[in-house]
Length: 424
Image (cartoon, rainbow, N blue to C red; front, side, top):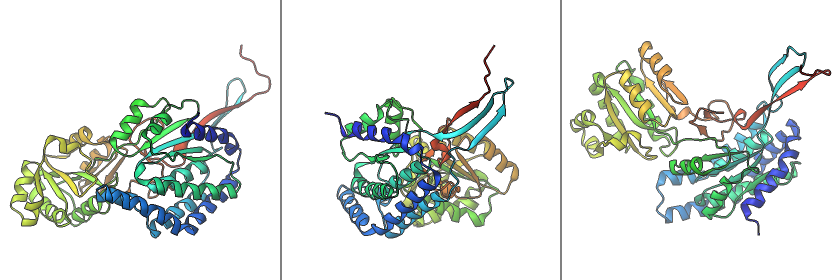
């Protein structure tokens, strides 16, 4: 007897050819219908989500992870709006990226085409169900989704609403599939379906991504965890240090573009570091501090002292996903860059500085997907980058890097037109 995973991947494979023949306008109409359906079924979707949230809290799931799982009426409206935004984005399929006439007289074009069947394995983020489905449909890719068990009710409900709306709008049967079983064997099986799945994108914990990268037999686009850094240079504008740090750490601490590591120039440790430690502690952030910043913290308020923890080597590479941060004093921009390139996950890093030379060195030499000057890392997001919804943030260097929008779900092929040429 064939498994659920195999059957659903086979249905997606069969639908991929028909989907690739649909017109841009047809897919855009379907996206708008999917957005409308999400809003029309808000009450049903929130009910399914509440079952997941209640079960997660009963298991003792950390609140930042519960926040990732939680849907609200406003968040569902945002998800629907993201689909509508996709509908008005330019369609990359069919775009000519290169064109010339060869010495033989053959006319060559390179054009963007769908990948085929895109599979995604993700954890506790029901919004990803809609984002992935929307991006796949916009780029004429069939889609197989495998969400985490924490969000299973939400994922199934969202996928069902989207799929039904797309069929009513004329999309081919089978193009969107969601794996409903919570058996972990299903994840392992999906990773092995060479010939049915064209690309697999994992999105979630470091352990999930590592497992997929190490065990998959299908091509993988690796997304990464976010040990993001904020470096406060001695020349930083004091007016922006605290607001940016608080935004980057506390607005949504459970997301991958929140900062986890803070670096401060030793020349400005007391002047800029003291108010920063006070603000973080007042916001409830536990500070894993090196010797210099720990010593400074001991001279500050009781609130800071209560939130101080002596850092260990493991803290420099840790993604907390909570109201915790590591803090290290550095000599200069050179040491900051070295620290980041050694311990970061190559996701997003930011420097706060007015010194143009320091800013330029940081932007040029930090090896991450997104590098900022005088801004919060929280902007690393497909929507903020004008890409529409994103399917993930790639920290690798092949095929795609950074927030992955529509172009990341395409490949290219060469089209050559001749007039009887043969090669001598």
